[in-house]
Image (cartoon, rainbow, N blue to C red):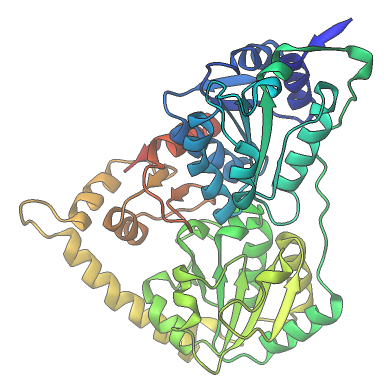
Length: 434
């Protein structure tokens, strides 16, 4: 009994636990799309490779599993690079599968001939072409492993037309199992050191990043905030890991919190442009950074304690090591009250902007009116410059992964793809893209 190359890739995707593939059919990947659907995998068809690669990128963030994108050769792969780079920069798992010309016609001016493996390599963690049809499952397994494990990112698999249309004996095709993540805790000695810094802090601040949302760390982070009672500041896509309605949310006093904190705990938050490269931190602040990637530690700021590991596990370690709240009476603490006063003052300014009746409407007034008409559990996709920045201050989120925006790469055009992926994931919730 034999299998076509298209069937081999489809079965391998099924064995890896893939349930959805985003893509555009055409030569030479039509057979792959048909085989994927024959395996019971949902195929979401687009009309533009850029948009479908963004959908796969968002799917990786929302589910924690590699988003899979299938495109045609040449220009199809070129256009899909937008989502590849977006995933690589944002650290979201994505596997791009691109068709390519027949191996026997390379260098002969074949249809849509392009050096796709080499083109994708600088923007991925893994980029390869199987050497034979029967090796497709092994290469796919490597691609998904690279995409999802450790620090997530993008991977590319090149499928020549003669591999897709060729066949191989079933007995020659290896069976692969589902992706099995491996999670690690931080060094216990470093945990004790971090707990000591937090115990001695007078004005601590917890910064909750997009990495905490991706890592499904909400239960652990909420427990930490409840026990330690420190103010927290979510980054735009870290909103909802701890509910925005929580009384320790310092978002409305962001500048003051960064300026006055004497100990900063970074939870899956990179000190890049989103956090002003650390330049608005208190220069005397002690920094504790929790991240899965050792090389990220100390970027742009000096780190006093580095905690490398899977964020939920590390936060659980840290919570266990903390004996009590940072102050005996958090609600009347001078630092907490000062932030509350700043937040109230900024809130009053924000409320005045909501009531602005000028024509044409301002961003704040328009967003305020939209907000009144949306359910509280809305999934919001926000892109643009002012559109994204101002929306961050208007819309509140009680659950994580309900706000998607241009994120670290700050690229425009993600709205439609992100919204489709979000609606697929949150089938029973309202998804709105602005």
